Image (tube, rainbow, N blue to C red):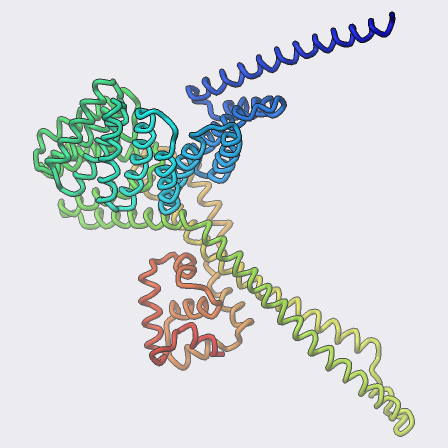
Length: 574
């Protein structure tokens, strides 16, 4: 009687546990779905990431395959908001693809290709963005959906392709894809139609086809107004301002820009407000209204100080320089032009800074490998010589013992002599490694000098434009950097010193023979170090054309024959 009772009890408790587990599983599934729905509407990215990772643990515990895919997809979207987190975003998109395919989601491949493409657009890698956008278009054609759904996804794929082609200045391809996107969205009455139309209007404006531009911009603006899309309305008003400005209808253009300005202020759309300022300044410049021009220049520069838009600031500085030049204020105009050029150079350098670091690290790595091989070879050769010398000394010692006993102490190699010889060899190896490290370190420090000068110039610009603002903190920080970096003025002299230790008399020889300048010597030294033209541009902070012209001039000065490059000539020179 006891055995059946135990079986029934076990069955009862197992049933209870199973029901509780199923209930918990169902509750967790509902929680994850609600979280995914909520995440799409929140703005606190950090807290959203934390919630998603917690939900991901729950989904893994219950082996919710589809929900794991959706959670990874949402994490990819959140990380995509920070262009520095591209790799992390792509990792989550790739994980999402695996889970969603496993769950049989027919949209997985399209979403993956589309999201990766958008990521590459954010970091301005247009060839990669184009590659994935084309894949997204191919996947959209294979989707097993109804006609309206297919048109929606095809429209999205063509819209992305059109935007990428526009960024790559391939305007015919951009127009073709944007028109396809507009037609697909129009067929299903999707608001995305107005995005495609506004992009088409902007493209035709750039092509000076004002009639076509007006048709598409009007369609976009009307659609945005009907759907009360405020950022779209402001965008459309600014574009109409651009259109009428290009057509010479300054009064009409003025009204559109003012409309965009008032709405952007209410909606706190600062970037659109800056575009409106830019347009208004252009109109007042055309109308020779200097008072209004000055007012909006001041407003624009004040707004620029609150935004991280260096390229827009470059445009505004150039516009200000042209304005001052027209007023006959050449010195002030030159100052603004120099500031624009310095900012432009700093933008280029900032974009290339990771590349410069990679170049220096790679160069030091290659130099280290070469040094290691050289030391091995030298060590092998010296070992043979040492072995032979020791053998000879032993023989001489034996002979001297029997033949010339009084000279035995002079010919016998003592332990102390051998120790000094080994120490000398080791010191020579360490000195060689030290010199090469100093050469690479000095080269890297030269690239840092420009960053310091750029910061000083930026601070001086702030002081000039806003003399009433308290900038003591920024001035103190810059002074501390100057004190810390005050040895940088001697870097070039240190660079040549270390370079001469590696390549003795190389620079003195070509300077005495050919009489080249100090700047040419720097370029010759970099070429001797096997750096490419691109590397030299980044280290000297000059344009590629400047380096090409300098190398061409050096080739003439060194009287290098046709068919022989400067690199080949310097490689065999010592």
